Image (cartoon, rainbow, N blue to C red; front, side):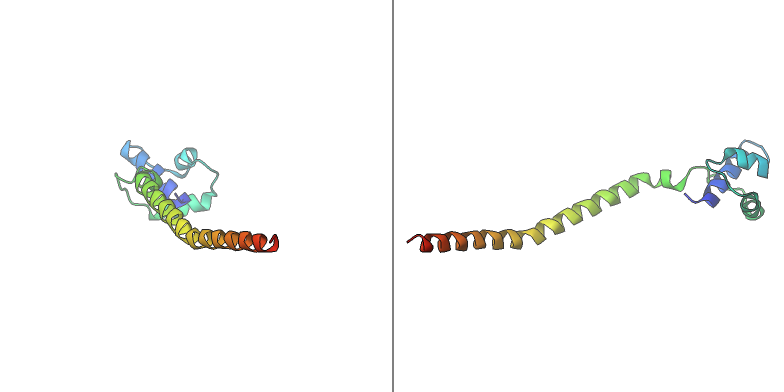
Length: 106
């Protein structure tokens, strides 16, 4: 979540409680220090949205987790497919080495 989203979330939460969002009130709700001009700038353009009170990352967490799992599975499958020819080549080379060793021992 961006700092702007965090400011907007705090403003909407306060407004939903019937409290007028001010720079001082917003500043107390933030999880990290933010310069006052940033808070002022965001509050100047803020319009109350009662539903914008949760961090977007929390809302989309399940979707992001599923996407991450899908991506992990896709990468694992691609790695496995890429390794098959290499494993076959290693196996063939080992056989050749064994044949060469047996020819030298004759």
